[in-house]
Every structure is written in C-alpha cells, then in structure tokens.
Image (cartoon, rainbow, N blue to C red; front, side, top):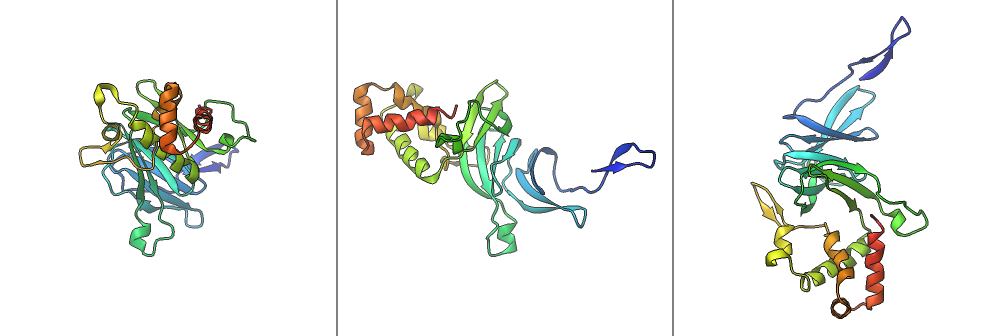
Length: 243
C-alpha cells in the first residue's frame, strides 16, 4: 500500500502491488526491501519489493512442506522459522550460487526439536545488555509459546559455538535424561515427512546444567574438554548472562 494524499487534504492507503502463490500467508517480517513470509503449508519464502516497478517478486523459497507458526529474519542472509511439530529451523539465502535454480532455493542450515509450539519470534533481550561486554555483542531473538514459555535464541560466534558444541557432547555422557531418554534423539528434527539429527543448534539448558554438577563431575567434564574447571565455569556463566 501507498500512503496517498487526497485532493481534500486527507490521507488514505492506496493498493500498490501484491504477490500471489501462497496457500495462506500467515506471518511476514521485513528488512529493507526484503520480505520473509511464513506460509500455512509452504514453509518460508523470500520476496523483494521493487520500487521502480511497483512490484513484489519472489527471490527464493524453502521447498519443504513445513506448517509454519512463526518466522523472523536473523540477518540479511539467515531466517528462522518455527513449525507445528514443535521444531525450529534456519534457512539461508544462496546469494552466491552459480545457477538461478540454486539462488531460488532457501537452503536449510539448522534444525532442532524444541518441544514447544512457538507462536512468536522477535529480536530482543530479557536482560540489560552491556555494550562493552563480549556477550553484549551477541544478537538474540526472544521466542514465546502457546504454553507461556519464554526463551532466548542466540547467534553465537563460530569459535564459541564449536567450544560449546564439544561441551554439550561431553555433558551428554555425564547427565542422563529423565527415563534415560536419549538427548540426541529428543532434539532431532522430527515431522511427518522426516527425522534428522539436530544441527547448528545447541541446548543451552543442558550446557548450563554444568554449573549444577558436583565438583568431582565438573573435574571429569573439564578433563574430557582439556580445559581447567575454572575456565569452563566462567565460559558457561557468561552464557547465562544472555538471559
């Protein structure tokens, strides 16, 4: 729509352009001229508004059949979505792909079973962010669920992600799930079409449970990591400051 001035001095919204091809577009997020759409059945698609042509065109889409419940743009290239099987996932725009076909496909780069029905994703923080701290530079997204759960998704630097991924893998050997359920199996992305291991997501609750271990267990975990207990505790405590 355009905000137009009438001859009598009043204003009105005037239809300018639209885009068809969705089953039911439930959610939209914008960043500049780019629009991300979460569809009832057709997952996530990326559109662009062209000023000169007064038109909206589709640039790329995720061709998986995900029933979306929320979407958000993490940055210009990465978008996050939640779907009705209690999973969250991320897709990436293939700007540098060699062919039009590849550029027209949003690549799934992260998958994770949250176990909650997310109905809202938005940029923000639950704590005061100190600009001079390392953690203050980490972008975060808040999610809300239909059960009233509020949580944080943080975009970690690669070095920190690799370190915490190793810690998570080590902790799984020491911390058993309720009923001895497999953590790997529980966090695997699962819907009616497929089941796949979680990737490019970490379980913050599991990682922070390191601080609740006995001193002996902490030392065993630290030995497996090849890192002193004090440094490991400090790294995990820094993570808790995100929320």
